[in-house]
Amino acid sequence: MNTILTVSHLTKYYEQRLIINDLSFSIGKGDRVTFFAPSGSGKTTLIAILNGFDADYQGQYSLSAKSLVTIFQEPRLFAHMTVKENILFPLQVKGKRLTTDFQQRLDHWMEVCEISDKLEQYPYQLSGGSKQKVALVRGLLDFPDFVMMDEPFKSIDIVSKTAIIRHIVEVYPEMTILLVTHNLEEIPLLSKSLMVFKRKISSDFAFYPDISNSHLSSFIPQVIEDLL
Amino acid sequence: MKHITPFFISIRNSVLSLVLFIMLWALLSLFFPVYIVPSPFAVLGKTPHFLRQGIFSHLTITIFRVLIGFFCAFLIGTITGVLSILINKSLYLNAFMALIQVIPGTILGIIFLLVFGVGNCVPIALVVVLVLPLIAINTSNSLANRNEKMEQYLVSIGGRRRDLYHHVFLPLLIPAFQSNLTIGFGISLKVVILGEFIGSQSGIGYLLNVSKIYFRMDEVFFHLSVIIAIMICFQITQSFLFSVLGKKYFYPN
Image (tube, rainbow over all chains, first blue to last red; front, side, top):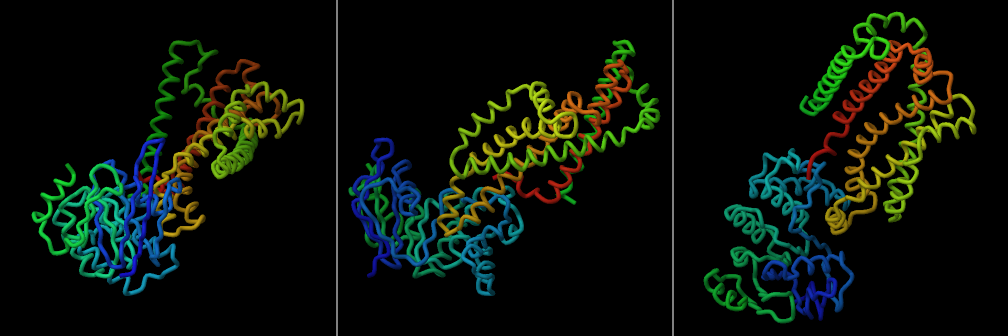
């Protein structure tokens, strides 16, 4: 399997405090990997480094995705744009036109997320969950090769979350995903493999290579054991 | 219609402020003799007489000076504020502008009078020097508080510099423009009146000075009312423009 992301010996200090310790891993094309770690363990810092926002680290990483999208913990919507404008903004930046294909995909996403009636609304008129749905649609509309998701379902209820994840798995089976979360229920819905970090993001993690057809109850006791 | 609502709220607030001002004035006139605070009704009664004294030419001159001075201060102040952020020198700008701000207007007025002589230049130069720091500091501070996460998002989707200016800087600048216009125009008006008071033989400030010299307090209060009317007209106009053209930039995150 071709690798899309390789991280080797990544170490990050923030004001002399160790945040990421000698992390090495790789993600293959089409893989859907979850990083499961407690809050404050450095997950968001890792996403920032992989996005190139933070250059102050040791070690190295290589990314070979043609199109990379990050769905951040906060929706990061533009307050002066409507929902539709926000969703189509990445296409506009890339100089792409809103084709019939895009429009159909957008309509489908709106139905899945149950926000069809909110296209002309502004972010301040939406709930936290709806904002996160908009951020997800905005990130996924253009079929990226590789998506990094930093707790993207945080404010979304379990029913909508399940529908959205099913839609992702069905419509984007080839897409490579790195999901960062501390929410156990999302893991079996989306992931093929799982990395469990005890406290910090480090080389010391438990790896579950195939959880794609597992039920939550089949690996959760072991995950909790890993965390303790 | 919905986006015009703030405009009507602004008109209502302006009218209420005017009514409050007139009530206060009327109240004060009850406690002071007429040669100190004449009643608003007495001043209103003499308005046709004051209007016949050629106030419109003076009013035009004052408005012209305010607009020219304020436009220069607004333009230079905004450019300076934006540049200070782009070259990462906003702290230096704030320190320097705060220094300029404390120079008393009367002293500057006299210096400008000696440099430029009596005429348009004194009030206009006063506005530029006294209003520019406020606009530059306000603009710079607004941009300094920009959301870095939105910048990161733009970088992550391959946004260019123009996207950053358009979608991160501009939404911060529009509300800053409005506060700069409201505060800056009010100060500009005050400063022009001061400039005309010190070094001019035309404008509302000059008329105020003449009225004051002869203790014609009804005329003084009439001219003050004219100044307040200018401010109210300006407030209503800018409120209309922002509610029609820039309302979306005022939405909360």
